[in-house]
Image (cartoon, rainbow, N blue to C red; front, side, top):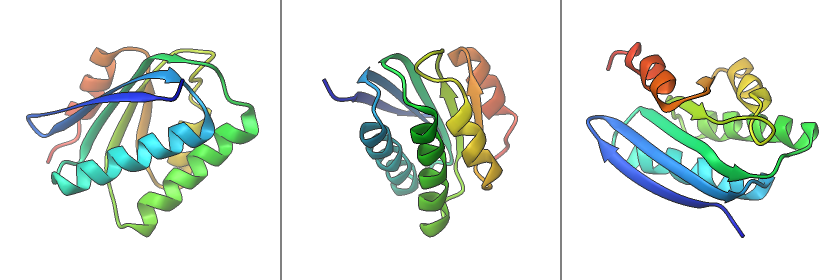
Length: 124
């Protein structure tokens, strides 16, 4: 089973719910698609809820995920605020930290409310 996503655009926020099997390729596809959609809709705040995802990536894949997403955003001139909601072992925040260290404005959150609070701190 691949990753499935449901996307909702509401009040300047692109809200994405992901479910299914968490793999490197699927996560890269999902995040690139979500960032492209946000750019197309002229939205800079993205909330990805990954609580329904299953599986866990090896540390090297998590590193690659964070690095590749950061490079993709930079290459395309994107400056989104990206809040990721998840729980271990599927999501542990390492890929978020890698992306953050490369200039992506991102945060790992344990609930949608925490992510909404973090995103609301960003004006615009």
